[in-house]
Image (cartoon, rainbow, N blue to C red; front, side):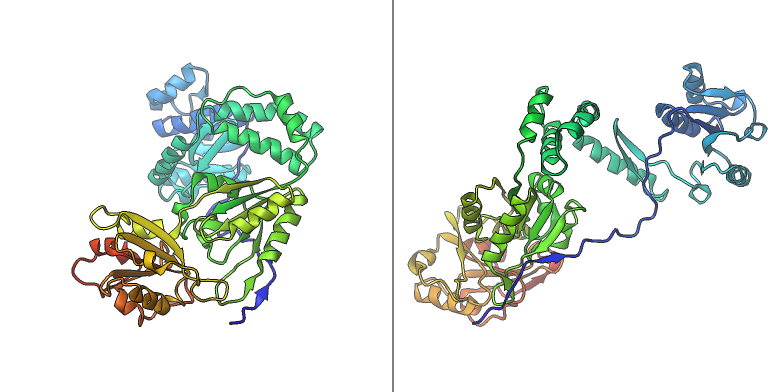
Amino acid sequence: MRIVSRMPAVAPRPRMAALSTLPVFYTIAGKRVLVAGGSEAAAWKAELLAATGATVDVAALSDELSDEMSALAEAGLVVHHDRHWTTLGWDDYALAVGDCEEEEATHFVAAARRAGVPVNVIDKPAFCDFQFGSVVNRSPVVVGISTTGAAPILGQAVRQRIETVLPAALAEWAALARQVRGKVTDLLKPGAERRAFWERLAAAAFRKGEADIDVATWLGEAAGAKAGRVTLVGAGPGEADYLTIKALRALQAADVILFDDLVSDEVLELARREAKRILVGKRGGRESCRQEDINRTMISLAKAGRHVVRLKSGDPMIFGRAGEELAELEREGIPVEVVPGITTALALAAELKLSLTHRDCAQSVRFVTGHARDGRLPDNLDWRSLADPATTHIYYMAGRTAPMLAARLLEAGLDAGTPVVVATDVSRPQQQVQHLTLAALGSSDVDVLRPVVIGIGEALRMRVPEQLTQVSTGTSAR
């Protein structure tokens, strides 16, 4: 079988998907803003505006002030004007916020727009030039979440989840970053040196118990970061939720990403948007990039000072030719790190809710390649041990060799009724799982154009105790 080679190819950078609104951060410290109304809702907006350092003028009659707004006025956080907003001029206001009924809102918005002042009417998106999102405050790190007024409660739920991820100490680290930015610019060159420093600081910000840093030492060490580095990252079987946090951080820190054909778009979407993406796919029986070209690309990019992420489907250390890549990188003296991923066999077990080592029928599990360099079954497999009924075997890249695999196992004495699972696109929306027997595997129709994994062993019977010929598709197999 002749396989056509292809060169690593730069993938087009993804375009920004449609936005319902433009997320911007507007500095209003020292500027005047107008809040029309004294309600509790208006008080929340007034407090938020005051927290930015703006001068907040509240126009509302005293008997209309809520307890919350009165407290803000007494604390000196807002300036209360005991009159209707129509009696105030619009000079020098940066923003205007109103809590108005429909008819009054129409006049309020018209007045603001005549004065060229961006306006927001609380809980009335149709009247708004801008919206207030849910806020996660680690100032100077500020995260805003917007649902464009469609689902505020959903925005709050997102905020709660982000709050749990961002440590409270992040504010101190961000303040430190602001303090040392000038030194970093003066002492470190653009590119690898500066990135080395900022990545180290960012990593430290998310580690609990990190001691105070010696900025001078870190700057000195970053100044020696002339060469780039490579990180081998496991992308998992396809579903983005299977990506580890460490893998996500590597993707967010990459300058260049070399990715396989089987890496899902959902995983790539989580990568740093500015990172250059290069497709270096290798697929059995199809046009593929030569390993030598992949190695050469990684080395040249790393020597140019780039952080290269080599993104591999599943786990990079299982049937991913990582050994060859590691040897080449180490030979060239390029720093390399490995980030493990969820291998397809484990994802399949999770999808089927199946223990691969159920103690009643399997005392071990074994991962086996079903594909040699020539596209056939490897000629050095120990078929007697592979026919062990007390072991669950998972065969990778065995779609084309499935008939011969079944024949060799039957010859080695494995029972013809042994349960078999043939799964394609594990964890992806188009996932298919077929349950059959070893005898039926030899004549089964396996889609060799899709990523295939084959499980064989008595442990598989725990999920299909009565019928071994049913076909489950997509989420029905989960």
